[in-house]
Length: 549
Ligand code: B12
Ligand code: SF4
Image (tube, rainbow, N blue to C red; front, side, top):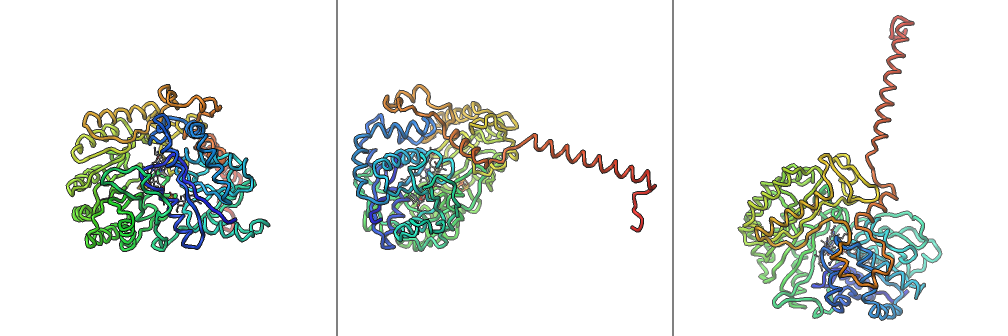
């Protein structure tokens, strides 16, 4: 097992090389393992016409069933993919990187074809798109040998070493932490891998495998993706991202700045897009990073996601601006204290308003995300969100995502749905739930539309609208290819796929009203019998105090 290739699968961003694959490539090379990479996502995008570009749309996943998109990408690029399959012939191990459910579905199709042509190849699938069981349920059985769950550096390295050593052939190897062995199709023991504690020890990506001129770039804008941290400090009740790479760890200021200098000197980058879940998980270290950036006068601009935190001072925000920060995207989510509390956010609407004002005053563009239709969100709560946007319109540059709330199976909310008043209306469709206020999917979508109308009225930019509408409206169908339509596609929403996989594994702790009733009835019966027993004892002996006591 000598030749290895890592392949980035579509759809994913096409403005910059994929960060996950870049990290893995540099890490393996640092361990003396020679590998190639291939950005299939970019190549297909560059070969696509207007019709196919729809599949790369950020909200395509909410409009068109995932299998439809994956099948259509496959049928649209068949001639190109034929060449790709022949190209893979020279590799012994093919590692697909999947960033979302569409890319996992697409990687599954590719793996199935490669398996048919070259049964001896080892095929591995990793990335955020196959982290959860429901994501993996879309991969055809027998196509992928191993799934790598979570951070891939150490896991992939160990897996390659074990496969190369041949120990594994005799079935003698112990389960590798972070790896699901999918070869037999039977459930195997899975040991999660411990996160890499000291993330300063991970060599930063060199990106030397990627051809920069191919990525979309604008005059004066030459970005690269980076991470200053891994994980998150919070556990919002609806979130699943915080479990993918936990706990929160931040790189030392010097370590981050060294990487920026490297990319600047080698590639002449002008911008950095931090892909962290939040850049302000450790305020002290963030400040150290800003101080160093200012001292080094690197003239690099950067953007990031951030959490609303009460301890973001005016001074810090000014320093961030001075250090090159031009935009922060806050996961603000709601303008209602009631909803923010249910979300397990550690701030109220007034804290958020204060922070975005301070951010804008420091000269940093404010982007926010909004979720509407959260379980327990009343008409009044929703109105408060709209009022929040209206009152703070002068400080908000963009509402990046307006999303109808989606129940993700491993989020706190879905594990204890009764605590949030959620009841399922259809066990096969996670989209079909209601809450104590009888909030319906239609109403959730209505609230998205109302929010978007307000944004249009206030002339606030809005990038992604995540509606949870019935799949494949006629308008969307128009963009699909006839070939894909004939493929006997199962039309399922993202939520359908989640629900089926999770209900099948019986991971859900669904509120069982009958069970609750039986327990209560049992307790009642027990106390009646106990009372009766004591009453009879008293009648017979004249006292319930036993002799000698
Ligand atoms: C930045 C980002 C984007 C950027 C990407 C910009 C870019 N070019 O870098 C943009 C805005 C384009 C984007 C788009 C989308 N995104 Co996005 N994105 C992210 C985010 C925040 C960070 C990804 C990242 O760079 N991570 C850092 C790298 C180093 O980590 P990594 O990729 O996970 O790689 C590690 C491991 O996974 C593993 N690994 C990775 N590949 C492989 C391969 C092998 C063989 C092995 C062994 C291991 C392995 O090893 C790596 C190193 O440790 C994640 C959040 C998250 N928690 O991951 C969401 C996330 C990946 N995105 C997500 C989604 C859904 C989307 C969109 C569909 C948009 C949408 N409607 O929500 C689109 C995708 C379609 C499209 N057209 O692009 C979801 C995927 C959920 C899922 N399981 O399906 C995530 C998890 C966020 C979320 N919960 O909604 N996204
Ligand atoms: S702050 Fe963001 S990433 Fe962290 S738990 Fe909350 S929603 Fe998830």
